[in-house]
Structures are given as structure tokens and as C-alpha cells.
View: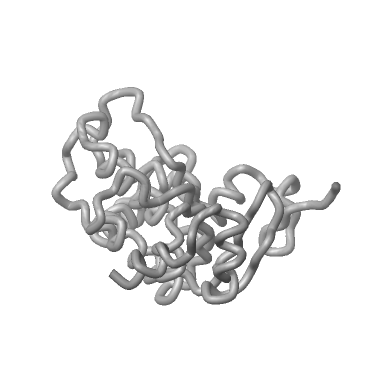
Length: 195
């Protein structure tokens, strides 16, 4: 198998790390903070691709950080040590860091991991808003089919590393496919989604 990956029509291997980071923000499933760092400084790491190499963060960078804190709704965490907040709160900080990066493409690995139900819905609403209002392309790995089908207009289902479905939720989550790929009765998902 061969191929290449391109961003804006340019092969990724021909772009610098900074050029890639200005185009793609990534939210990992879980990240650790190795030393005492205030939440807002962790979020400010999202501005690194935009910072002046010698001057550091400028007022426009701190404005982007403030916008991201507001978007994600984590103002109550400002000033706290990122090591001392819950895993769910840390996930929200990572989401704010990606929002502060202001990249046109956002890639997330299980963005709702460690979040309570209210924050799961708020996170998915934020992702939808970034897509619809700002035009951000959102690519997320989700195992919660009910959340995925409710918030995303297009789903790609993988099985053993192969794409087995690609389309709107009602097509990609065909009952027979859900039964074959996930080994569960799709009626259970219907009860969860409609509850």
C-alpha cells in the first residue's frame, strides 16, 4: 500500500512542523502535565505555532487564550495548577489549548473521555459550533455511537483498520453493519439515543 497525505494541497513531508501546527490542532485522549503549570499557560501552548520566536506570546496570543477559555467554559480553572485538576477538567483544558491554536483542522482522540454527561454534551456542542460557525474541520475518534450520530453529519466506520461505511449517521450506522462490526444489537443504541 502506498500514498501520501496532503494539507491544503501540499504533501505533509514538505511542510515544517510549524506549518503543520498552524493547520492542524490535536487533542489526545489523555495527556499528563509533568510540572506545576497554571491552566492558562497550558492553554497558551496552543499559541506556540503563532508566537514570535524571540518575543514569545503577544497580546493577540493572550486574547486567543482568553477566547478559548470562554468558548470551553473553564474560566473557573484559571490560576489552578493543571496537575491538580480532575482528568475531565484536564480534558477540557486540552480542548481549550486546541481552540486557542486556531487551526482550520481539529483532530481529536476520544474528546469526551473522563467527562461527565453534561460536559460530554457541551464538548460536542462546542465541536459542532467550531465547525458550523468558524468553519473548523473536525475529525474525531469516538466509540460512543449515540454521541457521534447526534452531533456529526458524517461518520466513517472502521473495522480492522478498513473503512466499512462512510456517510450520514443513518447510512453509516445501518443496523446490520452495527451488528456485524460492533457485535451488539443496534436496538440498544436506539434506546440510548432516544432516552
